[in-house]
Every structure is written in C-alpha cells, then in structure tokens.
View 1 (cartoon, rainbow, N blue to C red):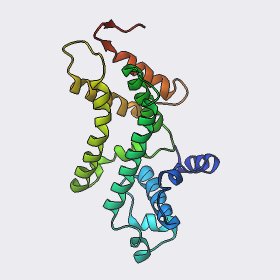
View 2 (view 1 turned 135 degrees about the vertical axis):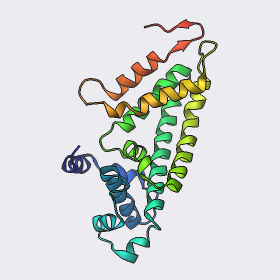
View 3 (view 1 turned 90 degrees about the horizontal axis):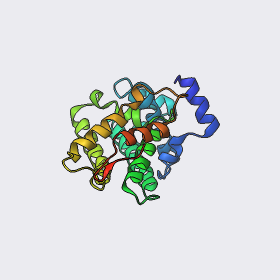
View 4 (view 1 turned 30 degrees about the horizontal axis):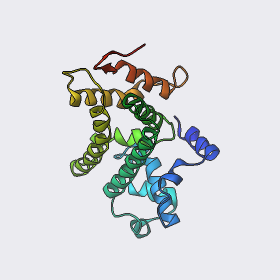
Length: 212
C-alpha cells in the first residue's frame, strides 16, 4: 500500500496508533510513538533514522531524546506494545468459546485479521527481525516466545490423534499463519476464511477425522 493510500485510510477511519499508545500520559509521547511506528512499518528499522522521526513530529535533538532514549529502545517498545495488543485481542476472541477447536480457529482468525490489516504495524515489525542489532533481536525474540505460549496452550488442549508431535504441530501452524501475508491479496478470500481453512487442514482428532 502506498503512503498516500495509508494516510487516507487513517484519516477516514482513525489512526489505530492512537489506540495502541493511548496509555501514554503525554500527548507528545503518543505522537512520537505513533510517528515512529508508522515509519518503522513503512521503511523498516534500518532505513528509519531518529532525524526522520523527529521531522515527522516536529522535534529535533534533545527535545526528541526527552521522549525516547534510543532507536533500539523505541523499536522494542513499539514492537512489544503491538505484540501485547495482538495477544489481548486473541485472548478476548478465545474467551468466547469453550471447544478447543473453536478456540484455535478464533485465535487463528484474529491473528490473520491483525496481520493482514493494511493499517496494522504488527506484521511489518515482526518481519524486520533480521535488520535489527543482535542485542535487540534477542529481546524481540523473547517477547515473541512469550506470545507463542498462547498457542502452546491452545495446541496442548486439542484432542489430537495419538503420536502427534505437538511442538512441531504448533511451529508448523504458526509458520503458515505468519507467512500468509507473503501471498495474500484482498478480494478472493477474507482473512477469516483463510484462517478457518488452515485450521480445518490442521484438524486431526483422536476420535477420527473431522467432518468436512
């Protein structure tokens, strides 16, 4: 999506960054975080400079560093906030169901709806892991590992056929979900429909195959 198209969406429906950083007490801090989030999503970590962020919000030098300590710290803060917000949405969707398969589908649907939203920063930030310094990458991986415990618990509750390698099952499922954005194009199927089909393909019950 081009920058002008994304800007038009934000103006029409509201900037989702405002909600993501709504807990920030200072309006200026919210503006800095929102601007940096958009720039990291648009250009990537390596191609975004502190000067770029400052120019986006009209701050320079010491004024900008009053709100953030470093680019690494800023990226980690935005990344962690986005992951935690995504986890909160997924847990809320899961809570609406009791059946383990329905819970897994709700999690998958919500995850794809977040990742494939053109205004979302979650997927661009997750895909930027190789561009960040090693010390920062280690911190981001720790956050993602904590997030994946959500799916670990979901898979543990599934009535899978005996002999299934549940850790491998979970990794394959998450790998597939995380790469839908590589080929997805709006118009043919919705994120919810794709997620539901993925879960159907992964459904292997202990009592027999799932109904079509």
